[in-house]
Each structure stands twice: as structure tokens, then as C-alpha cells.
Amino acid sequence: MASPTPTDTAAHDTSQIPAPEGSITVTVRVLRFNPEFDDEPHWESYDVPALPTDRVLNLLINIKSYVDGTLSFRRSCAHGICGSDAMQINGVNRLACKVLIKDLLAKGNKRTTISVAPIKGLPQMKDLYVDMEPFFEAFKAVKPYLIAYGNEPTHERIQSQADRERFDDTTKCILCACCTTSCPVFWSDGSYFGPAAIVNAHRFIFDSRDEGSEERLDILNDTEGVWRCRTTFNCTDACPRGIQVTKAIQEVKQALLFKRV
Image (tube, rainbow, N blue to C red; front, side, top):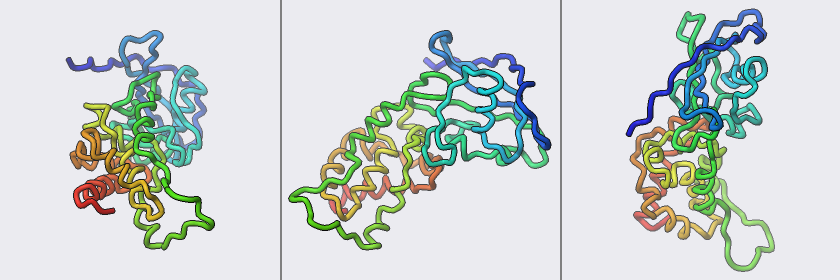
């Protein structure tokens, strides 16, 4: 049975939010949900003054600070590094701290509507934050750390520039979950490891210093591993760090097929 479409509620009074010179009005529609009071998520609207150079995160902070302190969302560094503020912005997974209002405006338009909702596929705990535990369980399951056997070396493990470049792209992951929660397979079956877990396995599978590649490949050869990927490129499009996620998944598949890394 399909979930009911969330209903809209009346807009809030946002007159207390400071309106800097040159600001425009942005209607921010937020998919709200408080498990203590709500049976289903619902949309609430806020007309917020904003500068074109503001980020979506700025608008959410202003709503929380001046209008409704109960609005809940995660944030930390606000510079696209921590990955805390991943959410759907106009239906696309993005980091709220990296999306500028001017990039959401139609040319010549002085007013726009932005819809903000939590990322899909993980339980909505309250408003814009979700339960990340299933995501991190998948991450931990692929053993995302250097594995080395034998005696502890007496000097550092030397690696050539070419060896380092082999897995350089997948070191950029910030575990924001944008890629994993943009994946239709993950939406329909949360037991799929998901792109982020595979990316972090890739980072060590192709590290010349690591000796645990076979273990990780065996894990990812499971029915919920890399073979569930349908190559839709949603994950690559969603990554705020520009990681070629789909390419990394294909390289892990090739490693399994040819039994070489």
C-alpha cells in the first residue's frame, strides 16, 4: 500500500527574520515530522528573506532561530566537509551548506520555492534528520580500515605515487549518505550495502599496502553486495565530493570477476 501524500499546512509568520538589503523572498517548504505528535509527515511553509549568495542551510538556521525552534536538522562544519546536513533539496540529495539560493532561482526570478525533505531509505526520526545507524552498520561491515598481517614493520610502508592514485578518488568520501540514499535499490531493500559502503571498501581493496582485499571482496560478493547495483548513476550524480561512485562499484565487480586487484 502506497504511503499517503504529505499535506500542506498554512505558512508561518516569518516577519521576525532580518531582511538584509537586496534580499528576495524564498518560500521554504519543509517536510516536518514529530513522532510525539504526528502520525504522518506533513509540509510546512516559511516565507524567508534571503540573499542570492545565502545557502539553504542559512535559511533553515534562520527559521529555527527566529520562527520555530522545534525545527530539527543536523549540521556541523557548514563547509561541505562533515556531511551532516545531507537532505533532499527540490527532490535531489544535496548538502544544504553547499547549495546557493542563486543556483535555485530561475533567470530573472525574484521569488522561488524550495522543498526540503530528509534523505530517503532511512527511518525519519524527526523533521530533516534520519536514523543513520543502518548506513553505518553497512559501512562497518566492509572492514573500512587497513588490514596487515605478520610482524609489525620497522619502518613506514612505502607507496608509489601511482599506487596512491589508484584509489585516490574514493578517499574523498565524507559519509554523508547522499549516494546511498539516492539509490533505488537501497530504497526498496535497506539490506543492500549501498554505494557508500562499496566506495569505502574500494578505498582499501585497491590500496597496495592492504592485505585484506580478499576478505572484503568475499563480503561484497554476497547477495546484498555489489551485484545489486543497477548502474543508474544516481549515486555519482548525488555525491557532493564528485566521487565517481558508479565507476568504483564497477571496478569492484571486475575485481571479483577476474580475481585480481
